Length: 550
Image (cartoon, rainbow, N blue to C red):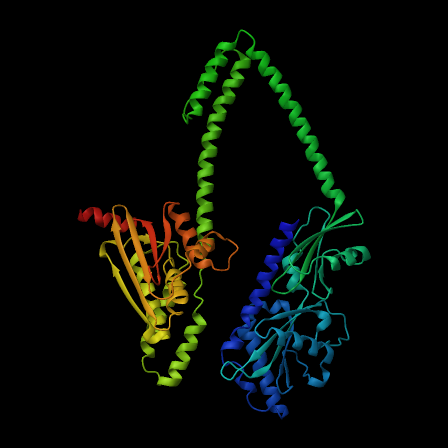
């Protein structure tokens, strides 16, 4: 139950994160210029409202319109823009709800916050019964990216399809139900409305942990399993009758007893047959089994004339066929698992320095009137082109080192006279296949934990060469000496947030085997040395060219 709730919670969090991502453009683009001037006339207010409606419907939420009931934007000067046909003023705002939500946003100014419909700032009064029901409200604090001044607050009111589209098909057992409540205990979604009306269940849900997962038994009749979202603070609770769980266990117990009885009966029959005069075929079959146990799975027994023995012989032959089939199936599944794990690990690496680089470009342009920016932009463009193609499973060592050189060129602008680098690579290994983005995290660690902490800066040196059937890549840096014991703990700790070194180690060993990977050595006085070992493997086209040249 906990796994089901956790997986469902992650699916819902992915939906919330997408809404959050759609609003990022309001933080980093000049898309709210139409409110720069005073909205002191009906014409200006109408024009700004139309531009706001076009922006959110055509640009931001074009693919999610079926889930949105209305969107409001309250500017810092208390002007109200909305996507509804009716115009609203700040005097119509529910001041209590508005103050509550803005207080929450000020506590976490860069995060989107989620609230139940009880916190809506507007409640339109319809004269007819509408099939669209209000659901939840998402709000965000918007600032000017240049001046850091408050521009206003964005409020997105969703309808009931926003959550039900993701949760209504979720099945909790055969009679269980799912319920979602916010941090204040307000019910946001419920599969079975009658459960929410059960006072004991409602009270028990409020006593479940406000963070992480929790289990609770209510009145000896129900079992509750909950998981709390770190994104929205919502608590998702699965409610299942205990009788349903116990009934399944009793059925399994009966099956186990029947299977045990059948196994005992078969054992008596086999023992009786071994004691009879027909032991010769059985002994021959036993010898074949011993032979097969030595990984000789191609052996088969010729069927005899005795019916009882022929059954064993047929079963033996079928078992050999089945074992070979299972081995092939297992190899295929293991290969798929390794490929899936490799892809999952590869997706963990992201260019964390994006915003630092963009900010650096901005201030260099302001200070130096755009001189030397062209080199930085060129290197950054090459860097992002490689990063966007990093979803491919393989690349060449030459392209990977070219990506690292672009990265170092970008960082040399950041550290100015503090960073020097040198790359020496054997040309014969440029076509060796590797996974994308295995060297950049190592260079990033060398800069962040070594050179950046040294007042005089330092040097990063990369050397790569081939020895027999292996390729060795040495990355050394001067600067502050590393703590090897702490780094080794990070490599073994799966719960650590420092995924760079551990991710590279796991990706290399998953793709090539445990005999390959990274090794760290502390310098004599300062800095560190990282040795990366990979096999000497070429792509099929490069292998053909190498053989033709040989």
